[in-house]
Structures are given as C-alpha cells and as structure tokens.
Image (cartoon, rainbow, N blue to C red):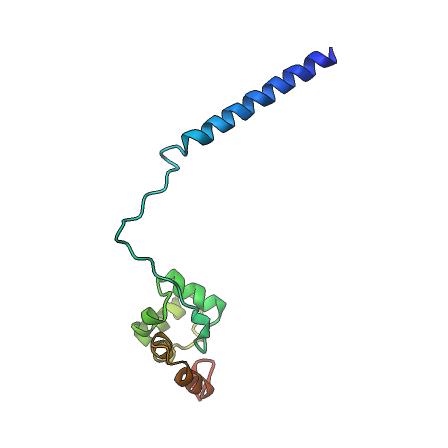
Amino acid sequence: MVWLILIVVFIILLLLLWLWLKGREEGPAPSEAQPAAAPAEVTETADDLQKIEGIGPKIAELLAGAGITTYAKLAATRVDELNNLLKDAGLSMAQAETWPEQAKLASEGRWEELEKLQEELKGGRRE
C-alpha cells in the first residue's frame, strides 16, 4: 500500500514538473510580456547626486522620483522649483540655493572647481 502511494505522489510530481517546463517554453503570458523599447530610445545613466553638497540619500531619492537623475537635469532646474519640491516633501530645512551651480560644474566635469566651491559651503549653503 505504501508503495502505491509513493508511486502516485511521484507521478503527480512528474506531471507538475512537466507542466512547469511546458509553461516556460511557451514564454510569458501576454499580460506578463514587457513592452519592447523603441529602437531609437536612448537611456540616460543616472549620476550620483549625493556628490552635490547638501544632497543626501533621502533627497537624492526625492529628486529621482521627480525625474531629476543627472547633473545636467539638476543644473537646469530652478532653485525655487527645487525648494518647492523639498517643502512639499517636508524637507524645508534643506535649501537648494547652490545645487544647480554645483551640478553644472559636475556635468561639465569641472571637479576641481566643484571641490573648491564645496569647501566654501556648509550643507549646500554659502556660509
């Protein structure tokens, strides 16, 4: 009797394995399929915005959520827009007054000038 139960369990396991493998061969269901990217679409690599004085992990995440993921985008964003974003997120203690300026230097690869500027700043603000 025990042998019969073991054989039935074994057959069920084989059947489940076969169904699983068959499903993998057919590919994902249409609802699970990922849309294909347009061939001409260029993906942008995110920059480490935490290299900007005054931006930490939480603010970098907030900026990324607003679509600001590169130094160039940050440099092109007005200070009042950045401050409103911070205010809306409850981070009004942070001030973005120098972030676009720093980001412009970073986007242009002017790292020595950025470092010199950052030595004059405290938390991203001019002292």
